[in-house]
Image (cartoon, rainbow, N blue to C red):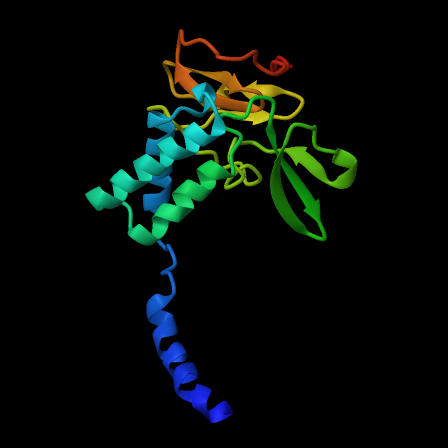
Length: 191
């Protein structure tokens, strides 16, 4: 009876690579599509999380259709949107390091520094713990949130200012734009 299953097992091994989903290797296309998603689906003004993820999924689908994003990378873009705090008022990304491994989760509670936690720098867990937040403006330099200091304005291009667009998330925006939520504590003056 065992030999009867042998041809099926061989067939499964032969077909497995063809059935397996390809791995995304085009990180530049993912980053560009995520930036486009941030422009078309602003995190700070998202009515709810589901609508935000749906909007970003539409941007990813359009990028695949236009050829600017490989099909196998679409899920990476949508996964980053799904693992974000966009459309989730009061939530923050929390980076916790245990045994030299840093993991991110979204929470309404503050991160416990005594347990190795700190507030993430970005609204998506895809980059919250690395500080490599995608920008959604024409400014080429980042502006960042630093725990205890608030938005650090030194990274914005001329004509841009660093504003808090949601708690614990800052963005370079054209001078004169207004924040959609109260900014975190301002950075202390240089001495």
